[in-house]
Image (cartoon, rainbow, N blue to C red):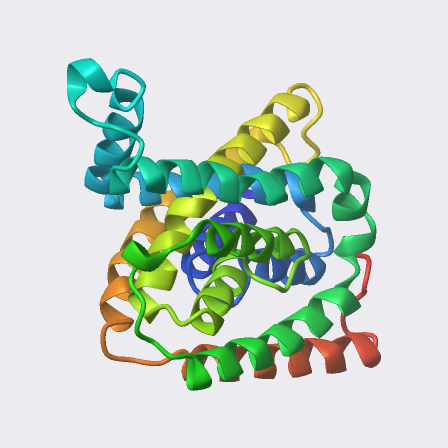
Length: 276
């Protein structure tokens, strides 16, 4: 991968990671256009950049949740117990991260091989566009994260695990689940971003360790793409969270449908290869 391709990959990763349009699908499509699939490892590592943007944007929330979570282990000294809302949120993020961690390890071969089939990406783009559109239109839109139950936290976790398949979208899957469960757009997106952090950082650093001495894309290109993804991703978070206060997900639903149709036609006529 040359410098230009790395910059474009990082730019696209940053632009698409937090929007419900699937960053992995876009990187997979770009890889096919460039003539070489960058692979699941490259995607996982560049997501470290975008999740670092989440870490900075939500730094106050994360610091408060982590601080309270640790303090709850010594309630007699700190006055913080397990019933505290921040402590509860910390445990819910941990529990919600288990499905993607377990399924990611068990299905690693599928993730790195079978799921890279572009026809699967096309199908997921279209199917989950319809799910997102329906959930956003008919969801009750009233719950905040104060109403989050343990069962809902686990359902969020399984929705996040669907993002192991390119085309689903990590934020798209969790936001769709949140809307179906009646959460506001802002609440669903906020929990989606917080929930993603443990899994993305764990996956990214795991793939980075595996790739030491064996990175077909090249470490220079991978690091460049990751830095670009961080800068662009932070700007996108700021914009997206403001957008959700007044707008629906309809533009993203339409975009997913159009992208799926265009890529499907390109595959059918041989302009793109399903396994490039």
